[in-house]
Image (cartoon, rainbow, N blue to C red; front, top):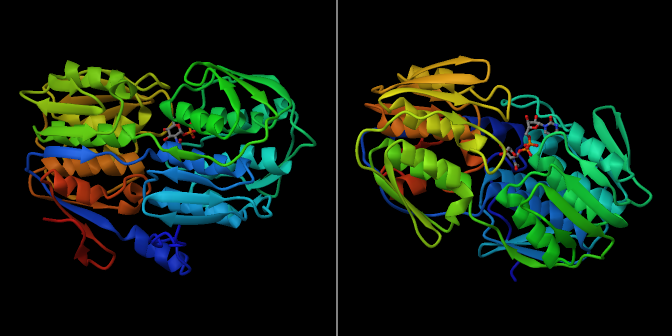
Length: 450
Ligand code: UD1
């Protein structure tokens, strides 16, 4: 394998702050009115790849992870693994992580600040080193995102935890298996505990565990490393700990949120879009909501085709942990609901402050009002292009979809949010026939505009 480096991601090079500022200057210019049509080959799931990368720290041999998306959050996790002492290389779509050298116990603030999901290294580090010092993640645009379940769970496994000077210090003289009930099926807490429990002596049971497909993917990777795990994908996961883990080769599952985003882009433009690479049941509830809106949805062997054949109908949506409607598709779905004939109610149950995009959508002409964790979406609306600012990753994708149907030109600023989680976003949209142009800081157009 060659030692080719990752192409240095924008904002993640030595220039640091200056480059980060340039990063924030990136926008997507969208000329609305084109009907999207065609097929998208899905990338690997962001929310799986990041955890698999962290899990590779549990072995003292190299692991290879395939179909890792080239997105900013993955580059941040590469930086994190390197900061912890692992060697990371990339070659022809494969990420190779060698954690066999001496590892550091300290996850720096700069990286945790850049990506809150960095705290996922906590479980593997305690398991491998018996200690971890992780910068406390701050809040973020979609709410405070606490980590109390992670901490209480690790304490149940026998770890001692202190929080001082903005860092969480976790120490353990040997984790012990325990029954760990979660107050809420948190994805990150389930994953951190699952990884830590592989090193705990005896049996651990995580009750009220999250059931996301990415948890199943993580468990499969851990099992291929030699872990003994039962029940991943159900709300009770049992881990028989204490087996030494070895390196493994694994391919990341397809990104279901990316799939939903492109299907919605197709639906909003009255188009015909197929996504390839995903097991359709991963998106069952979402697909049923599309059907209820009057969209023709066909499920095939790892393909999903959505055709908007007529007027869209309103539907009510409540986000919930999997298998409920994914909160990560809520903002994009609201754009389609804005085009439906009637009133829809969207209830956000997973995160606080997850309607940050509503003001920007309304600037494009959507008619959305919010009260607490409810949003009332009135349609149909004729959207009109304007300059808008992406408040976060999924909100940015929603604004791009709105731009695709808006009259005239929409400029979505803050494209760095979208680049955190969507691989080749503009190129993939252009491949479906969208008129999109990536504008780099300073106004230079580049990228995938046709
Ligand atoms: C993950 C996903 C994110 C997705 C979310 C819910 C990654 C990198 N991110 O985030 O895209 O939107 O799942 O599907 O995989 N909570 C606590 N205490 C805790 C942990 C969580 O109160 O210790 C709360 C959070 O504030 C939030 C809710 O539980 O309100 C859900 O959070 P969680 O499932 O942990 O989401 P993440 O793992 O952060």
